[in-house]
Length: 264
Image 1 (cartoon, rainbow, N blue to C red):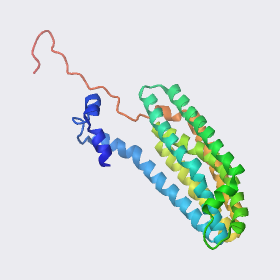
Image 2: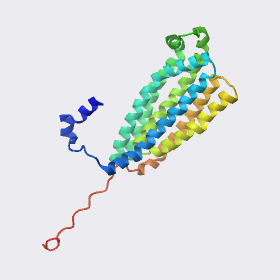
Image 3: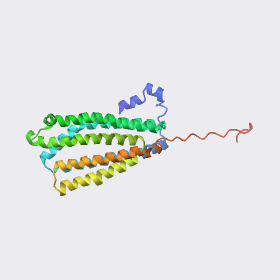
């Protein structure tokens, strides 16, 4: 935080953007930050909550299932984290294009980000399919032997390869929509899907139907696939193009003096 603050107020940024003179409280801008920022924060908190519930439920399936799931989730970070970064970049670039009222440019940037994410994630997913033993050996520790956990982890890595490709699209399109200011849709859609579809389904699969970890993970893949379908439809609809992230109203000019008479 200190480093970023120093960079923000640095001489170069101050010369380019007048950052030191712009450091004041603007109530109208603060309200806009809350309007667009709170939905993003609520969405992230509830999304993480639903996924945490999923991990806890998988733990009820036994030590082998839990270890295999943890291995697959850890390996999946190889595909997940770069997609998060690409999604943030898409959010920034989409916002910049919309600031210039370039809706078509915003669309192009969003889809190009998806393509970049898919290329990287496909390469990562290919290693999940071709090198599962290497990944499992990296993480297989504890009381559960490699021979016990490997068959389960290998199946989950196959799920993770599908999961990663769709999750990449989900993260990037979600970021693009947030960059366009469509944070309320992202919050309501993704939160509803996370709790009323994903979480409810996992509770039924694990607690009531007593099915295995592979079925639980397959349900997660279905959930992410449906998320992607909704986000693609929303992004292609362009309903977000009318959202104003900034106040574009011009200041009202002072009335000019008429016929040389002074204004009273």
